[in-house]
Image (cartoon, rainbow, N blue to C red; front, side):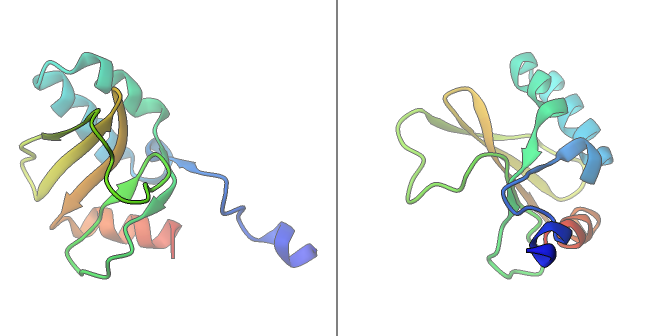
Length: 117
């Protein structure tokens, strides 16, 4: 029981702004530039549920909603944010950011692995 209390609760998500504050600011700015103010307003409250576990050394993607079993469904859209460094694409489901695909960003990858080993 004590060992369970000492470790971080795997069901407790951590805020993007706490783990990757620079990326959070970048996402908010890029969303505003794409005239996606409703999505930009979500960034400050986005919780990282888990990181992608694909194993690719260039992947720094993470889930902000529980990972789906299969496809996201008909109310899903992707938004490429044209990031200056690497690639950042959002999966949006029913108007909510569900997944942030981040590729070729070692800074983000290191922060995610440190928080989600």
